[in-house]
Amino acid sequence: MKFSKITLLLISIFFIYSCSVENKKKAKFEFAKPEDVGMSSDSLVKIEKMVMDFVEAKKYPGAVTLIAKNRKIIYESEIGWSDSTRTEPYNKNHLFRMASMTKPLTSVAAMQLIEAGKLQLDDPVGKYIPSFKETEVLVDFNPKDSTWTSKPSTTTPTIRQLLTQTAGVPYGFMNPRINGAILAKNGIPDLATHLPITIKETMSKIGDLPLMHEPGARWMYGLNTDVLGRVVEVASKMDLDDYIREHITKPLGIEMLDFYFDKSFTKELAKVYLPTRKGTIVEASNMGSMYIPNYPTEGAKTYASGGSGMTGTARAYYLFCQAMLNNGKLNGVRILKEETAKSMHINQLDSIQFPSRTATFGFGFDVAKNHPNRPDGSYSWGGAFSTIFWIDPVNDIIVIQLRQVLQSPYNQSINGKLEQIVYSALNDK
Image (spheres, rainbow, N blue to C red):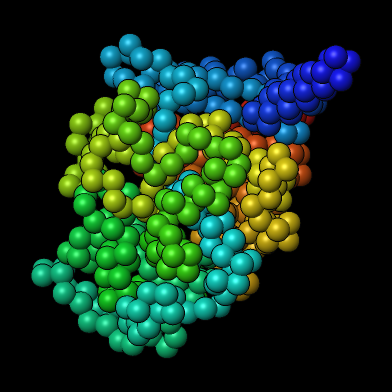
């Protein structure tokens, strides 16, 4: 009888302990007041008026903002409305198309495979995508019929050059008259698409098209990370979306950051807006043949763009950022070795000039240098739908602001104001 009672007691204690451990595992987010980590609430609250000023000027529908310091979320706000009739206020659960904020995750995937010995930084891309075994460089382009002349490149692109945006693979929107015409003629989208195509076939096509410059000769923003996504598929023998889910988002406990969502999540999608010639915005009903407003809950769901395909919430993306700020580790789970994670946010361009005077470029991130607001070494990237994040290892700060205006002309302005408010909150502590 005594044995039974003791056994029952031990089982009860074990059960309570197990539940306690499980609850700790489920506690993905920690919270604190700004003052608890040396920042000012009175300063951070200015973000709300700043965003609303842009909303009232009809430049943005609003924004969801998240700020974390010392591994704790210290500020969140949802300002504005997702829909043009202002009946659906922004909230923390809204899904935002991250566009190029996908690039850091795809870059991490490639670095994981380098750690595993399945890739090498200086491997030729042609080792994984046969059409890149012999590449050519554009010499001349005829806009009348979209034909061109080219010559064999001196070298062929490498994995390192894809990671640093120096391979010579173009974006159409960066030069629509030439790059855009060449890509469109071959059915290659700049952004993730709803069409029933795959990155296997499209990245193979890109290898047969001319590069815009000799590999490694200069920095040029382009579909390099989309090509890298296909390399990840070949090296890992997994589809890119499955690989990122299995090796990055799932281990980190990230649930609402993915390439595609079920149609039932359409109601959670933040509406997309387009800038007008009047300097205002209009809710998008059509964005051309390559893109639909309800991407990623509708469409073929076959195109996993490594450079622009992911959608998610601010809190979901924060978990990824926190893992990077922790040098590849979060809640006891390591996705990168410390030295690998650090290498991604130091200058990897050597003598190549980065277009911005206030940054250099690492592997998938720009890195601040002589920036007007952020300290040297902070690293970041943004997306075509006006999303932005930066990670500041000097002050242990993460800032994410999600908006949904395609290529807004006001991004530099609102980003600068956000930076000024964040660092004034640090100085006003």
